[in-house]
Image (cartoon, rainbow, N blue to C red):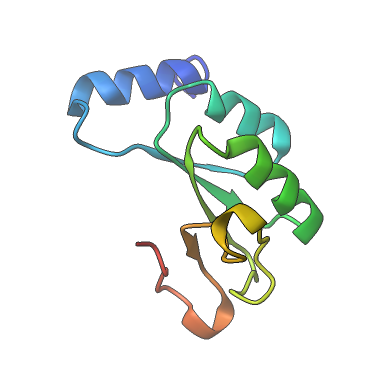
Length: 104
């Protein structure tokens, strides 16, 4: 990588400017922690268990938009009461919609 995630995000941000959203893919909570403090706009939570997704969404709330991939469906996506029971994930990729994100 370019000296770590924070450095890579800083370089990307300098190259494209604030209007462009920067998303990174993570597959561990440690990577998510680093992403959360690097100033990314969105995080793709890749191939995480449902329990790990719950933890990841809680960690990212208020810091970055979250999206999940790796067999997650809208029915299994973590939910919270603060979002009227709806998924706090902005997008979910799953086999029935392969290649098409529900990103909004």
